[in-house]
Amino acid sequence: MRTVASLLFPFGLGLSLALAGCGGGETPDPKDPSSEGSSDKPKTPQADAGPDAALLGEVGQLNQLLSTIDKSDAGRPKALARLGELLADLSKNNRDRALAADPNVSSLPPPAEPKAAEGEIEAPAKAGPVLPPRNPAAVKRLKPDAQKLIQKADMYAAEAIKAHKKLIADHPDYKDMDKVLFRLGGLYVTYGQGSAARPIYFELIEKHPKSPLVPEAYWNFAEFFFNAEDYENAYKLYARIVEYTPSERTSVAGYRLALSLHKLSRLDESWKALEGAASAARIHGPAGTVDEIYRDAPKLAATRKPLSAKDAAAFFVRLAESNEDVIKQELNRLAQILEDEGRPLEATEVLHVMIDRYKAEKCAIQARAIEIATRSGNNAIRADEVNRSLRLGCKP
Image (cartoon, rainbow, N blue to C red):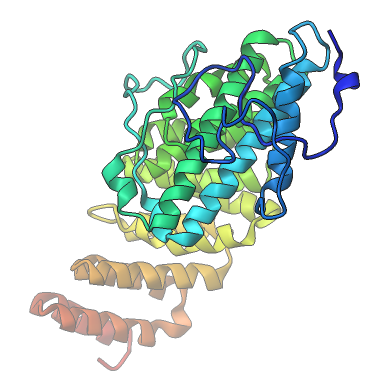
């Protein structure tokens, strides 16, 4: 039996995707030069093999290697890990090309998956299911080139999953198992199989708690739930991320945590999370997150019905850390949102709070309150605002 060192074939030796001992699959098209089993011997890449020729060459080389060594070879785990990584890259490359060929790929529905029990995020690791097929009708609605590319991407994803699962089963003590688990979980999530990714990420978190990939695992799965509008599970995972050392990732996670809690109508918790995210983002970045928080804060505040203008103002003071320009901007936007929502009385109350805070601008602010009351068609509100203007010494 030869060792890994004696089987370092010339680069680009073969293109076969037969994963020696990595599980079966559907019979491939023998006319597809990249399909598994298309030849008994590895093929040499041709000049027109395409942009993935180098990756395919290395895949062929590794498959040839794995077909000649047994489980006891010290280099086998690393070879399987590299094979899985390459196949994952090939899947991503083809998916990216499919998206470039047809933007509708981004909205392609994922295959159906078994629904996990409510609130069940963590469960003992189990063997993940084989990737289910996509809805043929949905795929056929894509442009022809995109159809071929997405099918190729799915084929490589399935093969990558086989390689990763083979490595996990045969070499559970592999030194870089955290990377293997993270990549496998990511493959499932990309394919829309959250129930399959769940135990994989749980195993990473449970068995490799000090891995720098653990926060990223939480993030990937939190984003999966957030995009699926499963805010109950999303907020639990974002909450785990913000417990780590402050960074750009924890800042954005705090922002997403606030949005998730808001969707669940847990407003006090949402405000608190948003304040923490803004503070962290100002220090650690990214700068764009601070802008997003300031943009969304008035929307969150406006969801209180009835709204306490004083509470909202106090929230903006904490959020902006007493930056008066930001506080004024947020109160103005809140008043506008309330007017747009047909809540003129609350809108004028926000402006009254602004007058108390920015006395030098009281007449201009009060004039705006009269305008809002007038546009509302409510004569009682308008009369109150005119009287308030007179008491302030302003011309109505």
